[in-house]
Amino acid sequence: MTKVATPSPNQAEVILVGCGCPLRGMGWYHAVQMLGNECPSAKLCYIVEPWFLGAGKSGPGGAEFADFKCQAEDDHQVGFYTSLADVPPVADGVKRLALISGRTIDNPRLLCEAIAAGCTVIYLEKPGATTVAELETMKKQAADAQVQICMGYNKNVCKYVRNAREFASSTEGSHVTFVSNNTYENNASSLGECFERNAEGMLKNMAIHELALLASFYDVTVDNIESVEVDKEYSSMQTLPGPSGKEFTDFDKVKFTIKTKTGKQVSVQADRCGGDTSYAKVCDADGNEMFRHCMPDDEDKANVSVLEAKYPGAMPYFFSQDPDYATVKERVAKLCATGEEAKDIATIDIAISALQIAEYLTPLMQKELEA
Image 1 (cartoon, one colour):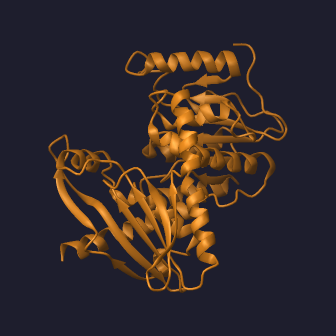
Image 2 (spheres, helix red, strand yellow):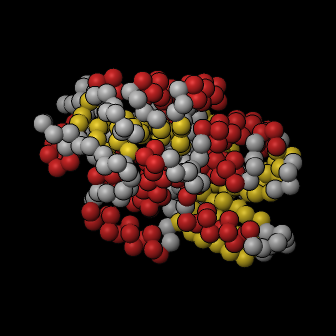
């Protein structure tokens, strides 16, 4: 390959770290959106993919990745590498962004490598790292290098979240509940597999987006929590065997309300088996529902139909959240390219707070449900 993609003056030069398998990997979908010009401030120039360019080349997904690589090279002049260290040095005047979309456990190492590769902004998928201590170390490393970290908490920019917040802000005494649902079957086999695959637990995985919303928009931090009211009638915790035979204890559904010392109040409801619609609702002071906005709504469903035809067999959640993924990338890329504030995008501080809240709530709620 002779020519390599180069960004225009108002674009960030993007290195995607962790593409994964076409139709299945979140990194692949990030690439598709950028190559399709859905994020005008982002120019995808390099993809770092150690697995499918190495040991996974001849395994499942290897042939599909090879096809995608050829197309990206031929049509978009994207350069492919097995490590960040192999990517060519950043050119003078170019603003380089790393979008890290691999395994959470690898993020601390990849952050250091992205800093060394000359990236001035780093986009991390949620939750950023497996522990609060790792996130705090990463925050310091980035700050020391004058590098900004943005988090891929896409619900921060979701239409249903924004509309519920706006409605509540204009309604005295109102109360917001964020509801997150998944589509697992309500049986021991399905939930046991879920518990094992997401062994960090519901609050660090499925509901971490909602905890980031609380940290971003409702001043919720562990130090600022005045009280937590657990809806014990709704919430459920089970101990189930996973596919390995080992037992795992986790919540299959939770509902709780947090009051802060600064006078704010907000609720979260999450259900592993609740279906494919998530929403935010606003109630008045007496608990009567005044407003609800669901995701996907009719506009989203029309877009989903178009994307299903365009990428048959891809992961369904790519499509329902497609506009939000593009919005987050565009705002982060524009921050990198021009310095413009990335409005509503979660920072590393929000990521730290969300993980701290999860670690605070989990034993508290386990104790409540065991009582």
